[in-house]
Image (cartoon, rainbow, N blue to C red; front, side, top):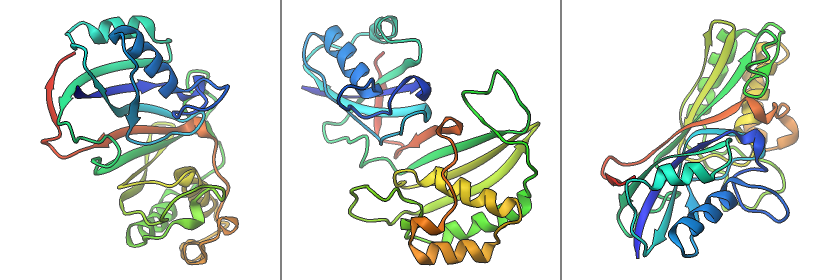
Length: 251
């Protein structure tokens, strides 16, 4: 058996999240089904993390083991079988002990807001026209870098061993009529990024301040934080690994 890393992307609006679940179409289920058919043996994939229903991914990584030969045409054949909302981008050789989830050093997400109604962005950005103060939101976002316990932004019914996360970057930027919130961390809790964005937007509207964000962080209570913004504005844009993690590209 040899281990490989698969790089792929998907439109989250077409799936009930990444992870396999009963009676629902997921990214993991479709990839495992098509890879199993192509390689003529059962294939199970392990992703770098889970995305919720409606969340998109431009750069996702999963590993899998197979005794079959991987040829240069596998990506082409796999993409011919996958639905239009899911694309395989590359397959790399990796060490037998490589783990897509535990070896990842960071995940980078973007939350995208469009200030004007745009039919071409309706499934990929949150349409929100009210004024937002980027300066105050960026000042507040700096607090995330010096904090470690993010229980206040986690979905209540979730099974995790720890609410500890390390945030390396968190900032807002403006691009034409769009606002983009970029956040990079070693890990994220379920629903965390959407709750962070909803809370920062309350600050941007002048309803809360940076002091309120500090109070929310200290409270460890999800009820104290802002609402979760819609899933379709959230994009996983990159999963990073040590430079030596990936071997040759084989498809």
